Amino acid sequence: MKTTVLLVDDHAIVRQGIRSLLDITGEFDVIGEAGDGQTAIELAQASKPALVLLDLMMPGLSGVETIKRLLEVSPGSQIAVLSSTEEDELAFAAIEAGAQSFLVKTMLGDELIDMIRRIARGEVIIHSFIASKLLKVVREIREPKVDPFKELTERELDVLRELASGGSNVRIATSLNISEKTVKSHISSLLSKLELADRTEAVAFAWKQGLMTHHRP
Image (tube, rainbow, N blue to C red):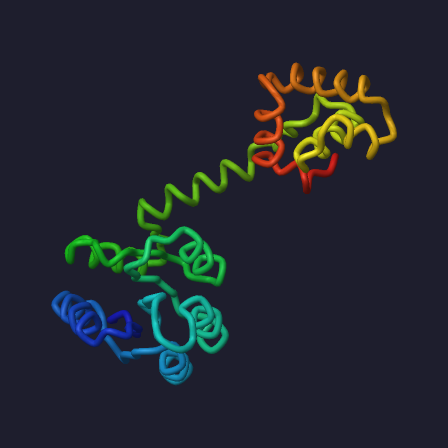
C-alpha cells in the first residue's frame, strides 16, 4: 500500500521536483499540492494524508501556524518540514508546534527519498544541522545555572548596580546612605571577588551578566 503524501510549498517547481522523486519510487501517492498554509489545511482535512511535506517560508499563514492547524484537522498525519531555512528559532518553533521531522532542501535526491521512507515508517528524522542545535539547547537546560554574583554580599551588589548605572563614589555613597570610604571598600572587595581589574571591567561585567535585572534565587 502506497503512503499518501501532501506537498506544501509556495514554489511550484519545488513541488514538481519532489513529486517526481516520489513517483519514481512507486511507494508514494501524492494526493495533493498546496502553495500556502490555508489551502494545505483544507486539503488535509479532506484527504487525511499519511505524510505532509511542508515548507516553513510561505505567504499568508505562517509555516508554524500551519503545522498546528494541520494537526487539528488531521491528527494522524506525520508532519515533516522540508525547508530552505536553517534558522534555529524557526526550526525549534516548528518542532514545538508538532512537526515530527525536519529536513533541509540542500539534501541530495537519494538522501531525501531515504529520509522520507524512514519518516513514513514512523521514524523521527532531524537533519544533523538542526539536531546539533537542539542538543546544545538541551545541554544548556540541563546544566545548572551558576550565579555569577554569588560571592557578593547584598551591599556589594547594591554598589555594583550603582556603579553600572554610572555612579561616582560620592553619588553611590549618597544613594546608599553610606560613607565614601565604605563605597571604596566595597568596590575593592567586589573587584577582588569577581577577579576584575578596575571599575571599567566591573561595569562591563555587570551589564554582560545581566545584573540590572538580576535577582537572588
